Length: 200
Image (cartoon, rainbow, N blue to C red; front, top):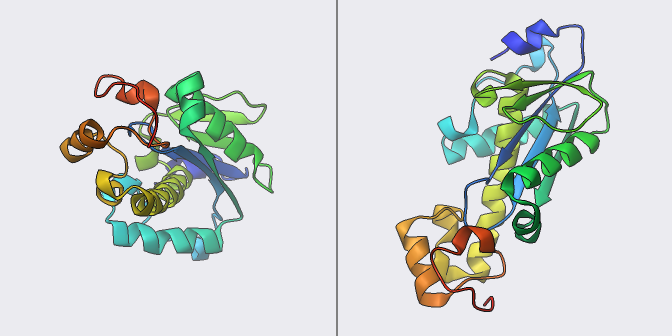
């Protein structure tokens, strides 16, 4: 997980990742983080957020926040996703997360996506499994977004957001058909499932 960081050992390295590109509802969340590379500061267990249990992610989230040199988490809401599409929304969120850092990195490692920035970037396929900083960013984005969806579950209890986090599960799609869409649904994602009625 530290090969890319070691490659830039003399640089300040940031990592960027996102959570929520695929769901039918809720924002896409992008996180950028600069983690300390001192051996005594390395957090054991950091990996691609999808490979970790929810409990492990929550534990690592706190540790990352506590130890990060700088971090920024950005939400791009469903209205913007519908307006500019999910890829452009993701790029926008990543750019804003990078710009939101209090420390300017020399290079930013990004999971697959290329963004518009003056900062030197390296785009790494499956970067959340290969880079420590990207993996840390993936945990920040995932935990932050999961918490949001749990709150939305309280507002819209019929859709199972605390379980499906907005993804198109059978339960979620059936709820869309039964109850219609909510204000947090992405119209461009749900057009094949329901008629575009007013939000509930």
